[in-house]
Length: 527
Image (cartoon, rainbow, N blue to C red; front, side):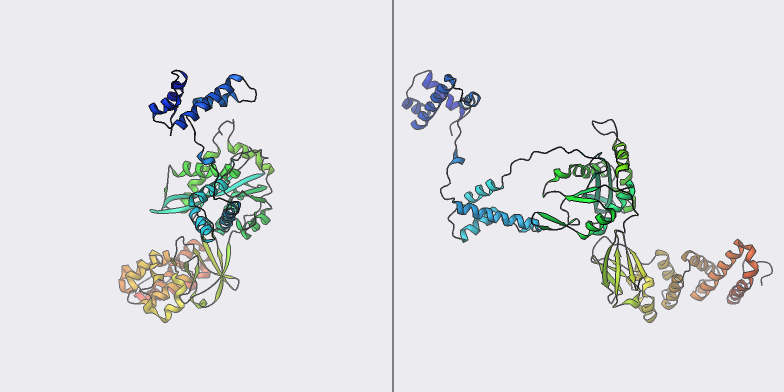
C-alpha cells in the first residue's frame, strides 16, 4: 500500500523534476498505472481548488490532497450477496431477538451458525460476506439522550445490585435493592439474600415506610421479579408488581431492553452506594448488622451537599414529601405456597427442608415465605416458624417437633440431626446427664415445650448437682423448678402469701422427702 511519503515523492518528481511517469515508476518501484492514477488525481484536485468553484468543498479537497491514499475496498459491490440472502440473514437475526425476549440469550445463532443455515438452505455465500452483512444490519445509529425534568414526588427508580461481603466469617453474595428519587437523588438501599418476589415486595414496603409516603411512578428495568413475559414489544407485569401497585396505588413503567440511560439515576446509585459503603467495610456478624451499617451510609450520603447545587439530597427530598401519595401500613411481603409434609416431618421450600410437628406427616400445609423467615399454618393456626435458610439442601430442624416420634423411638435421639441443631444449652444438658436415659430427656424437652424456662431448668440442675449428680433426674428437676418458681413468686408478692402458702408447702414437702433435707431458704412457719 502506498504511504504518504511515497505519494509525496511521486508528485514532487513529477511537478518539480519533470520526470515522466515511466521513469518515476522505475525509480520508486511502483506500478506505472498507480503512478498515473495519483498524478491525475492530484492535478484534478488542484484544478478544482484553484478554480474557486462554489460547489466544491475546499476543506474536504485540501484534506484529500494532503492525506495518504485510501483504498475503497469496502465499497466494492458484493458479487454474490443477493436481496434474498440479505432478507434471510435479517430473518435469522430477528429470531435471535425473539429468543432474547424469552430469556434464551445463551441459545442465539452466531454469524458462523447463520452461515451454516444459509449453506444448508442452498445459498452460495461465504462466511465473510455473512459476517459483513450481520454487522451492517446490527449497526445502530447512536442515540441522542434527552435530559429529563422531574416533578417533586413523581418518579422513583428501582434496581438490584450484587454485593460481596463477609457474614459471620463466611463470604456471601448478597442482593442490594436500591431506590433513587429522580428529582433529588435521594437514595436508600437494603440487603437481601436473593432476588425473590418476597424480597422485592419487602424492599418496597421498607422504603415507603421509611419515606413516609409513596412515589407516584416507579421505574424498573426488565428484571424477572417485575416483568412476567414479553408480549410483542409490550411487557406484562408480574403478579407481585401488580399487587404492590394496587396496594400503594403507584403507577409503573419499564425501560427498553439494554437502555440503562432510561433510569440513569439508579444505575449510578447502585455503583455509588456499593463503593461508598462496602469499599470501607465488608465484614459483619449478621445480615441485620450489615443492613444497619448500609442504612447509616445512605443517611450520610443523603445529607451531603450535591455537586453543582447548594443543598443536599435530603433537603430536596423534604420538598418532595408533601407531594407523595399517602402512607399506608407496611405491605405484607410474603410469598404463599401449599407444601406437603414428607416422611421426615419436613417441608421443602426453595430446596431447603424445614421441620413441623410430626403428627402432620403426609398433610398439606400453608407456608408464608418472607425474606428472612417462614411461617407454617395448618387449619388456620400457626404450627411452626423458622429462620429462612440462605443456601440449598440445608435442613432446619426443631427438636420439639419430633417428641411424638421420639417417645416411640427414644434410641433414635442420640444420632438425630434434630438434637445436633438444638440450642447449645439443651445439648449440654443431654451430654452431661442423659446420654444413657433418652426417655427422661424427652420428658424434660416436653416440659420445656410446655413453658418451662431453660435458664430456670439449668438453675435447678445446678442445685441438684451440688447435692449429688445422681439427683439430676427429670422428676426432681420438675419439683425443684416448681419450688423455685413458688419461692420467687412469694418473695415478689408478699401480699398474696396467704393464697399461695398451701400450694408452696406441698412442693417444699415433696422436695424434703426426695432429699431427706430441710427446705433451703424456707420461710418461717413453713415446714
